[in-house]
Amino acid sequence: MNAVTMQAETENKAEAAPATDAFFRIEDVHAYYGESYIVQGVDFKVDHGRILALLGRNGAGKTSTLRTIARTDDPQLRRGEIWLDGQPLHTMRAHQAALAGVQLVPEDRRIISGLTVEENIALAQVAPGHGWELERIYSHFPRLAERRKQEGVTLSGGEQQMLAIARALARDVKLLLLDEPYEGLAPVIVQEIERILQEIKALGITTIIVEQNAIAALRLADDAVILDTGEVAFAGSAAEVLENKDLRQEYLAV
Ligand SMILES: Nc1ncnc2c1ncn2[C@@H]1O[C@H](COP(=O)(O)OP(=O)(O)OP(=O)(O)O)[C@@H](O)[C@H]1O
Ligand SMILES: [Mg+2]
Image 1 (spheres, rainbow, N blue to C red):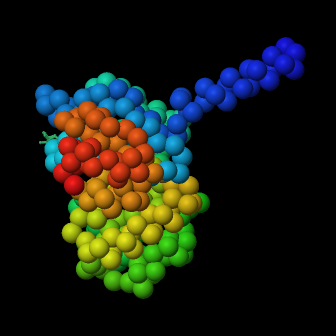
Image 2 (spheres, rainbow, N blue to C red; image 1 turned 90 degrees about the vertical axis):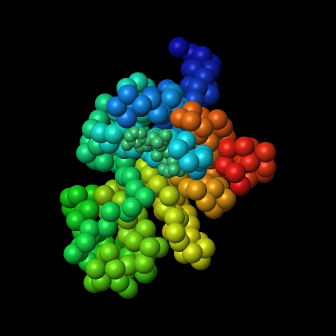
């Protein structure tokens, strides 16, 4: 191969890469609760270190999509592929997906009662050398550092959300899935969590955020996907959704 053809080959490869090599992609995914067909052929991708807002009305399938990505037993994935950093999540069970770097922070946050903030984080640490050390976590969550000896379940809602995110960091998260993280929180706390999520993003963590508070999620996100009855109705930039009032009214009622 002479230098000219080699250069041409390299250029072709460089052009082809973005379509196939997204850090995370979900392809033609179909998932069911028993016989209820809920996730109906969902496709989207997220590049490394970006934040994607996954939006849509009540019952659109947002939580089901997150659960499918995290490979929980319900809903059941029946068709499609899910790839994270070259790893086939669609072939994995939930614990394997967790080891591959997927961390779902569910709506109810699941703070373990009877354990302090620090114990909640320590329990999440899989093995020495994996995930973030406590002091590194505390440097991003000063409120948790102050309350490290307090029982986790006695924290405020916002602090519990921070603890749930901190636990995901302790587990060496590559893809952070947040289901309604701002639910029930005052705007000032929402802003504090947004700041933390931006800091985490700057460190290269990729995030998918599901939120009823679409405006706050879009303000944070780079990309947006809107689901409508288990299908993708829109995929594009978050800025596009913020600017498009018709789109917001049709699918988000904001
Ligand atoms: N465990 C389940 N068994 C059967 N159907 C379910 C189950 N969980 C959710 N569904 C149905 O799946 C559909 C999508 O639900 P999902 O919770 O994914 O929506 P969502 O977009 O997260 O909604 P919300 O904004 O209300 O949280 C709904 O019709 C819901 O009734
Ligand atoms: Mg939901």
